[in-house]
Length: 279
Image (cartoon, rainbow, N blue to C red; front, side, top):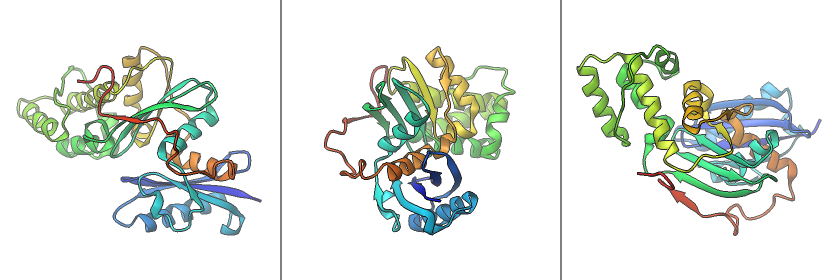
């Protein structure tokens, strides 16, 4: 049976997805990217293939996306993160959409029209305060595993605020609150609120909002807080952490229509660290 694969080589994690001709996910895998991006791509691809029950010979094409898309030696093509995240979400949901993707090292806001075409995007690359690495730092300061941070935050009873947008300064501020005897649960929730504040400052969130990324997949409190900030429902599509890899697999399936320059000439210009409502 013919199938297709996508690799999302991120700065924090590498994701791989194998799909059939109808876009159904047959297998997926995630691993830390580390210093050897090619090895991480090989590892996740092998893992996704094993879970799919397919062999290399059944894969018609593999496309790559993400931070390290040019380091995937077995990829037949590549697309930008913006294209693949938009493509993956649009497969499941009809537009217009505002996609919020929160990854390990950056956050993105992507706007799609009713036909799933990208209208604009904003990216936060100058500071890690709006990303998963910020939560890793907070968990380290609190002495808990990152996977336990969400459950810890649900016990919050006091509304605290981390006023700094900088990860380093926020960590210092957190230590000050710890010295004053503030509870870990309240501090964990304060970290989530701080991250949401940073993301919300990137754009104006109106219409149908969709949340993707590893932070969304493993920190459901983020989705709740984002919905509160947007004053509306926030939709989480299937496999939100692997949505970029899924979009790359769709691009592989849809080639040669997708065979164009990786950095499209009509790519809307990115706006970094800001936008309406930014500090």
